[in-house]
Image 1 (cartoon, rainbow, N blue to C red):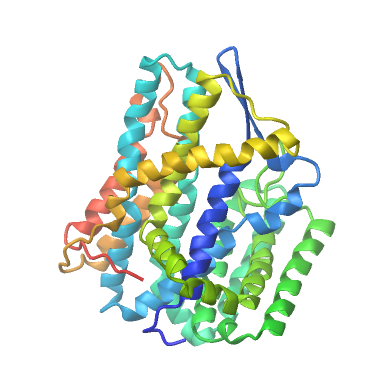
Image 2 (cartoon, helix red, strand yellow):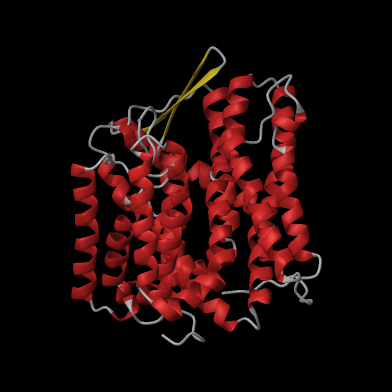
Length: 421
């Protein structure tokens, strides 16, 4: 593939991945409300359903496609400074309306009579998925250096990162639990790096048989790690589980990524044919222009639907897997989709607008901007958007949102360039 050409396969992968993320997040909650408390569960905790997460946990595909897109767009940009300034702006700007809404939403919900515990749950849900944006921002910051490493050492780079992830897991399961969070860098950088190899015709040159062999190897290693290692079957965190493969990420995820990447490469001609259809192409362009906004607002859409149906009308999720659950799922999904489209009409413009091009900020300022933005996003993901009643304002989301805003300001004060894929 020429770097000057747009790869519609990547467009399909990214759009399909975000739709899979939304579907999983909207359909897995098991909710009920009684006595002022919202009870939450996970449908994927149903016995036998954990295997679904081997395909529904598509964050590896998001980082893979993101790595490929970043590698392509970096080579198109006038300089690394121009590219990084544009990327930071495009990633952080859509967060501002989300933060603005949720800094006032908890107080408004309390004033409307919502009990405290559901308000805290809503604030946590609205912020928890910002972990992805925080980590992805770090991978974007590292992309120029990782691209240079790729050109010099090739597949040795993800191999070394994978080896470091193994060492981190050994230390984590040997009693040093906090060290496991280093894998938020090693694991996702390794998967992101595989996107470079797709662009440079390594993975991108595989035929169907080779791709299926790669997929079988990736899923096979994953199965061995689950069967004989300390890793759970589920590729997402489960309520009450002592170990999660996602938080922090484990070395199972790179092998899962290889399995998923091989699988989608095997059907690449069919995916490109799908993208060539006018309706599908228009949908891909629409989603691609709003990718971060769709990700950021799909959980607030769920909060709205749950608040109305569960708290206001006493709806309780049927037992997962029952006929009632399968009957209700399409209606639940449709309601959340309707709310999401409404939110995107209002807030999607923060991502789709084109900003004026000026001279990019110096690289040290851009690095500082990315680090501050990532720290602020991690704080919001960990603490949520709700300040507990009677709590200090500094214990709530405001300090973390301030870091995000400061990061955007540093990156955009002299550079408002938005680099499009």
